[in-house]
Image 1 (cartoon, rainbow, N blue to C red):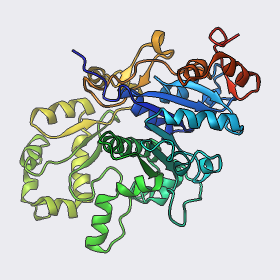
Image 2 (cartoon, rainbow, N blue to C red):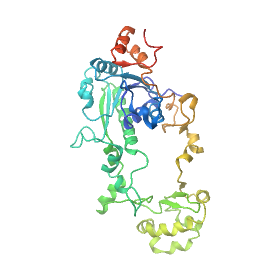
Image 3 (cartoon, rainbow, N blue to C red):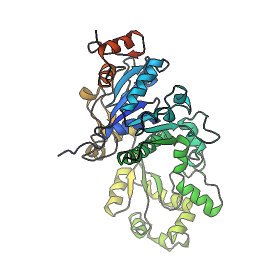
Image 4 (cartoon, one colour):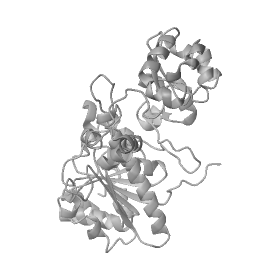
Length: 403
């Protein structure tokens, strides 16, 4: 029996754009929260990404599923008052504009706290709300560079590279959700709401655990290692006969088994590879020896053989392979339901539980839920009609709009 959704009964105001903020509220929506997306009358710019003319582009649909849309002009006093009123009936507000932007509109945390003492307010920005860099623009690329990730990403003899996924955006969305969930526990205990300040640059810096450890221990500045590990070997990728790549690692106690499988039994007598630390210090020479052996069979053949003797390994899969992968299908990671969701495939939130319903509904059209949201907030039909006529709000469901 499915359990009650973790965040059923919680309302989240989503005053976000781009990726980090919307991803944060998507996580909350997949956990069962009612997320109201506040959009300008022209709509979130993500609606037009990839040249889509429907207003429901795939990038928008991916990170705004389950949500409801309220179109409002925050440049008007009436629009700002409307959002402030909705905040009074909400548990969480998430925004990811430059520091100070919502304060200028009278919608900052300190502005809302007197009338919303239990509100959890989360701000996601490039460099956070404090520090000398707080007013600088923050992007995924900039954060990966500033937080040190790009300096250790790439091949040993090639150019540095950014991570292929927008990890500072997605990671900051996750940290935001984690902070919000913690603050909600406190608020539910009757201790009041709180302010959650998340920075893209902090997210990247927080993941530098091995690299900082290496620098502090050795005094040497870490650089790119390709697929190699910073503390162990072999722990990296190897190209196989068919041109595909596999990765393997954590083989310390299984080292003799690996040598036997690769027909390299004599290598265990080489003092340069005697211990895990020796293999780590001589990882380049070791990779060259192992690499020649892996080129004698295909990726899938090697993976099957390695798995059979308990060696941790896996194939380097391409995106087209992962969307149809049997393991991810069993985990529900990719939802294929175009009739219900509008698109053939959407990426799910990776929390499997009876309390996490995950993807439930398609993304909303611009202003699709404006009228119902305002009615729920106590606005009568005459007031709603006046707001529409004054271009304070937008409602793209005319059959629901008051006459």
